[in-house]
Image 1: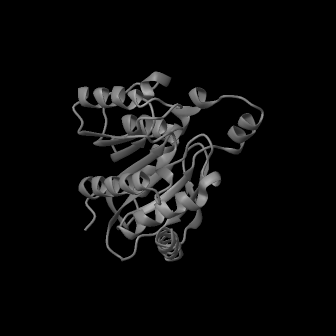
Image 2 (image 1 turned 90 degrees about the vertical axis):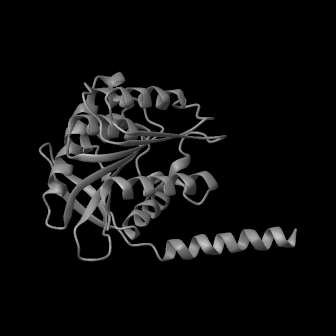
Length: 247
């Protein structure tokens, strides 16, 4: 029992030390045609050209798990990616949600164009190596499929437990290389949705990887301190290194 308690304490201390060393985020406004967009920017070290990766939240936003999402973004930055937590919903969207309205299908095309505007902007910056990645969680995963389908400037995409955006009205004629991550115990978005998306990506002749995590429920990916959360992060990093060309 003492050995187990000591091991748990060491793990807690290691996680705390890792997070204490995280790269800090900076609040910014980035331009898009609809409006300026609130983001939190985690800058990769060094002065050379580097890719950008935008993270897109699920229905609950980033705030409920801001420490976990910030830790994830900091991990991206340490690996050489400029990382951005993108708050794609407007003040008007938030009021509609607070009033109990389901606006996702009505707004996903607008949000996809907004994300694509940000991708175009980031690609044009002097520090960019010209490559842009997306990582989306749940609703943000579905938004990732939509934005990736609409903009050739999206070089690679990672989708955690999302669905094929054609199911919510997006016309898809292309995809970048994609990595799909899902838990087989997901009761919110069943893992078969990722299987369907993988088949569609393959049909459009884009490289596709699909990883199913046994026993994991919806939302496991943000917490990188768990076994499967950490595994998923490492798979995402390896995929993005391969596709976005960090040197």
